[in-house]
Length: 100
Image (cartoon, rainbow, N blue to C red):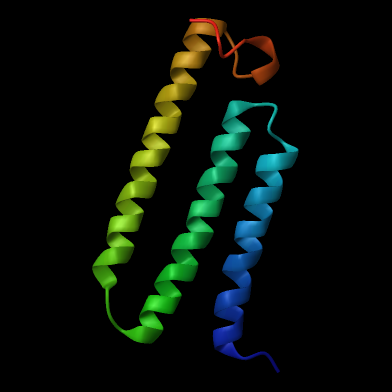
């Protein structure tokens, strides 16, 4: 029988691991990298909110973290749009980051 608190730790850790694996394995496209990072952020948010719910304090910290994750996603999408407009696609192999 699985304890509920151990499942609340195990599932987000699997999400974080799968997001890191996706970031490393499918890093050819920028959109795949951004989706993997957002999946990792969702796992970290789930882990943090479940642990803070056990302590029953600092709920505002999870809201602050969620705000930063949304800002990170918006910044990543902005960078993706700029890269696609300047180079035509989002493949890392098609452009040099040292060129302007």
